[in-house]
Image (cartoon, rainbow, N blue to C red; front, side, top):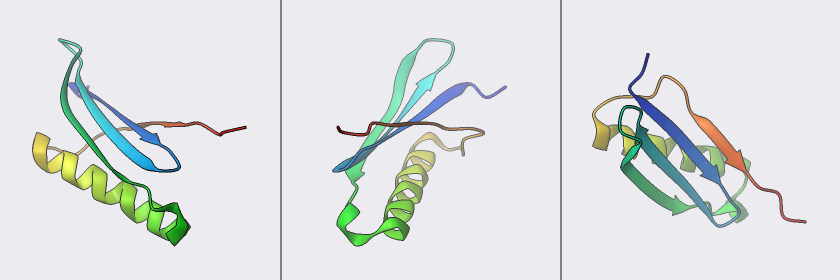
Length: 74
């Protein structure tokens, strides 16, 4: 089992990733970048990949799984 929880919050203006150490519940990496949604769907996917790559580099490993949260404004 992976020793970290990975979570990504995808919003209209920002995408944020947090990595939590399972054994301590401590946030060990937290990064955010602009969504830039006006540039289209493919760009948003690239932004998510960029963010995950940055966080992976900081942690020194890739995720086994990632939880995503998306809130739709009403």
